[in-house]
Every structure is written in C-alpha cells, then in structure tokens.
Image (cartoon, rainbow, N blue to C red; front, side, top):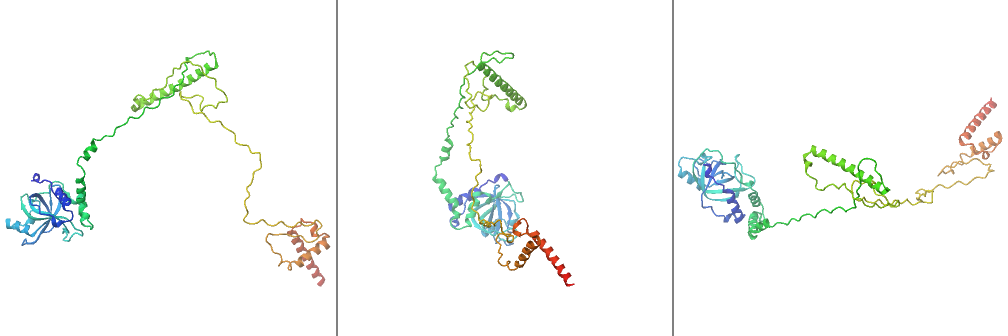
Amino acid sequence: MSDALLPWIRDYIISIAESYGANFSNIPLYPKNKKVQLIQFLTYGSDNQDTLIWAEISDKQYIIPVKFTKDAVADYCAARPGQRLTRHKGAIFRISRFRPISTRIPTTSGTLTTEPTLVLECSSLVDLGSSGEATFGSPEPILNHPDIRLWNDGLKKDGGAGYALVYHHSYSNLAPRNVLKNRKEERVPILSPPPPPSPPKHSEIHVDITRGKASFSSIDAYHAFWQASRVSFVMSSHSTRIMQKTAKNPMYQEPPTIAPPSLEYAQTEVEFEDINIPSSRSATPFSAWEATPLPRASPAPYDDDNQQRRSLVPRKIPRPASPVPMPKNHTGPALILAPNSDTSQSQSQSQSIQKEAEGFFRDTLGIDAGDYPWLDLWRIKEIMARTLHARRLANMSNIT
C-alpha cells in the first residue's frame, strides 16, 4: 500500500501560496481525490460522532495537520455504521474537497498552540484499508520547506507579508525562460599568460677546466678560468642535492620547467675593471645574471664644532640670586644664607647670642669671626656651649 502514496502536499501548498497569498476566502475547495496516510490523531471527538476531529496526515514526504469537519465525520459514520474514525490509525484514506487554512490547532496535551499554523480543512474522506500500519517513508513537517515556512511566517504579520510568494512568482514569470540557458552557454575566453621574459644574453667564455697546471697568457684568462671553476663547483653540488631530494620524494621526479645554464663558455675578450667603479654584491656570482651594483658610500658630514650644543630650555622656577660678596677686612659675624629665608623675626632673639660670641672671639681667642670664614656653625655652637658652662661654674664658685 505504500506504493499507492505519491507526494503532492508540497506542490499543492506552494501553488496556493503563489496564487492567493493571504486571501483565504477566495481559495476554492480542491475537487479531486488525493491519497494520504492518517498517522496520528490530535483529538478523538465524542461518542455520537457529531464533532470535528483533528489529526495529522502524510503523503510519505511531508506531514501536515488536518481538520475533519463535522460533515466529513458524519458521512464517514453513515458509510461505516458501528465503526469509529479514530480506530483506523495508520490507514490509507482518500480525501477530497479540502483547502488550506491558518489557525491554532490542539496539541496532544489538550491545549491549543500559541500561534496559528497551516492546516488542511477536509470535508470528505474514504477509508481504503491498511489500518494499524507504521508510517510509510520518512516524512517531515511541512514547515521545514523554506518557501512554505516563509509563507506561514508572513501570515502571522501585517503589511502584506503573506503575499511574499505571490510577488516572487510574478517576478519570475516576467523574466525570460531562456536567460539561464544563455548564461550557461556564455563562456569567458581564457587568455593564456604571456611567456616569461628571456634572460639577457651574455658573451660566453670558453675555458679549459681540466685538472693540472694551466698556463695563462694574461691575467684576464686567469680570471675567466677561476670564475668558470667556481660556477662548475656550485652547479655540481646543486645537482647532487636535487638528485638526493628526488630519490627521497617522488614528487620532485618531474623534469624542471627551466633548464640549467650551460657550463660551456666561448673564449672572448674580458675588459679590465677599474678600481674606482663600485664592485658588485658578490665577487663570485652563482649564475650569469648581473648583480645589482652597490651605491657609492659617502662619508658623513664633519662638524667643526666639537662642543656639544645644549638647547636652552626655559626654567619654570627662577634661579636664586647670588649673594653679595663680603669685603676681605670684614669684622662682623659670619653670615649663613639659606634660600627663601626671612631673618627679620629672628634677629631680636639672636642679638644677645651674637654679642656674646663676638666678645668671646675678641676677648678669649683674640680674633674676629670674620677673619676665619672656615669656622662653621657647629664649631661656633660648641665653643659657645663650653664658654657658658665655664661661666656658670665660675659664678657658682663665687657664690659659695
């Protein structure tokens, strides 16, 4: 019985979407018969069979919910008295007078879906047998098809989104049918790449490179012999490495695209090189190609001024003023200057100390403080402390 099912649900739904869009009121009932398999019941109705029944049907390729109307259930019960429709799960049915609608459907748990979906509303069905059969083929939900899913999503929105397939179908009909065929026949001509530039031709020098002592008539012949020997040694070592690599890896066994340069040289005159001409990058090139000449080096400019010039940077803080130099025969006390110091308030407090120190230098030591600037503040303080202590002891002895 599975051979009796032919896929038709997808083509029918797409044709309706391209023709009517969201205008479900103008969709006519399909008059012809189509075969489906009833694979699952969503509702079972009542005992008197006067209610509609929800189920899922398949054409062996896609699954779509179906709503059997009250008239369809009543006609089925009248044709088969004593048999309920819900007992024929897995059977093959022939349906007719159906059309698609968008509505909420019941679930197996007894509730309705949150959003509307595509459903077939059927008004006539006939049982063809094969009750209790398993699902034929491997059908999938109809909304898995991208075009049908686009139409179903557009039906949930406003603004004409339900007519998406209508616009797409109308636009495709305006294009000529042979456009794609002409595009396939067009072929872009493939241009062959230009041949690689040939290396510059150089005059060849023929030199006998056999072993043994060789006699040279001039220095030019010796230079040519030495250069040819060097090139021969390099090419022979390179060929040995290529042979070893080819033996290990068969990938390199293909012949090279560029033939190695010939080792035979024709004897020609060699020009004498001037020592003032800048030399090339290598004195012994590995090939006959000319090397790029090096630029002539020029010495850096010499600066006669050996002293390093310091840039004058303006100071944010001004430099302190230099103290006024004191005369050589100064007889006053030594002055110790500190930056940003104000001695106006401390002069009255230290006036007696200065007089006592001056009297000590003059009476005891017989010198003036200004004559010896090497006496620092620490020594002056120490001498003053000893003097005061000696005077206290003298006063105490006089009292006793």
